[in-house]
Image (tube, rainbow, N blue to C red; front, side, top):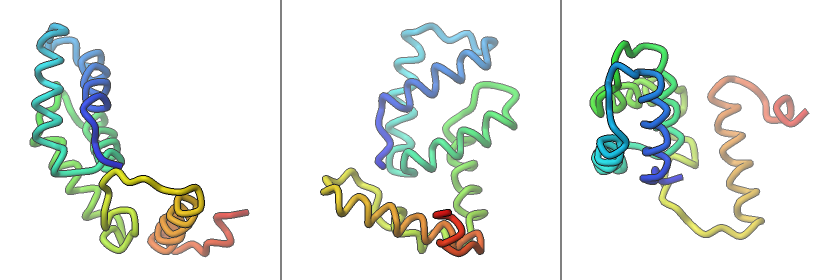
Length: 126
């Protein structure tokens, strides 16, 4: 799913709580979230952003920079076997799906993920 500005804003607010020494005011966080979104929207999808934030939360000693988030995202991409072949990552723009298309797409992603970790799909479904 495409990374949206609201999601970035909520994430940065959560990060500001974790790093109170950053001392950002609500107005500063609004400005930062717009800038972060602008810098990150073309670099990663929402799922990659969330994965990168999980890495950054574990490592960061200070409020994370855009560069740290991008670096963590690149790490996610490098460390995920079969990442580029996952159907979801081929095109992550927001699309309108019928329920049937959505189910088929989810099954394809699940199969790709199962292959990437060496599990058979039947084992995942049980």
